[in-house]
Image (cartoon, rainbow, N blue to C red):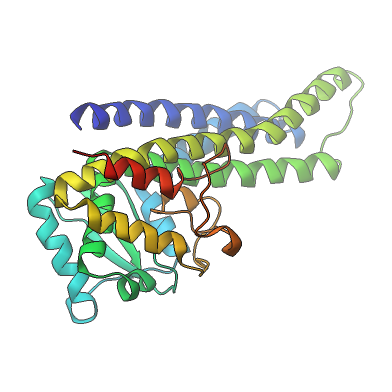
Length: 300
């Protein structure tokens, strides 16, 4: 587990650096398209560094605001508060995560934050209503595992960065197709190269960001599942919870494509696909539930 968290910290640094470079380049091309001259690189660097700083410190708040989550209370959510308190003993974490609830009928949950000392677990009202005590315990233990393994920083920051890249790419496409660049006699060739490179970034950046987001999410779910069993010593609770979450027909209205990878199960499954056995593919935000359950059954 220590090796996993150390690896996640290193991967977080590498991925954040990659996204800083990508965002810097996109902003630089946008500024060039607007003919801002030598100011382009300065604006690009300032924007990318500010975006990175803001994402690191406020990505959890962005995600919670996007799904309109409210803070859990003992008066309304005593069962889940008690489950989290009990799991803190076996998890080894020194600070209890903040607990939030989203008013949504689909049973689901996610964890977010930049480190274990600044972490959040968020569950839906559907989860609280449809799962029993031991199933809820398994889900909360899974999210605590993401926190302890430092998955939360990586998944949350990547989600925010992917959103930024998609937004910037869309902005650049509008500038290109609305005639934001003007040919000048002394620089028409440079402008043509700029437009070509910009088009490549426009097409590939969102795809690259999404693929990275999906790959990171899939491989961490198995680790979080197995770590959760170390906390609860009860694989049956998590197995039963995953089965219920997979078969539930409701769509998660508060989720979006940038944050889908953060949830314990894919919030956007088609109703007709629920309950069917299928393998995860390149575009899956999660490994298949069947594969996860099989892995849990094989834990000794």
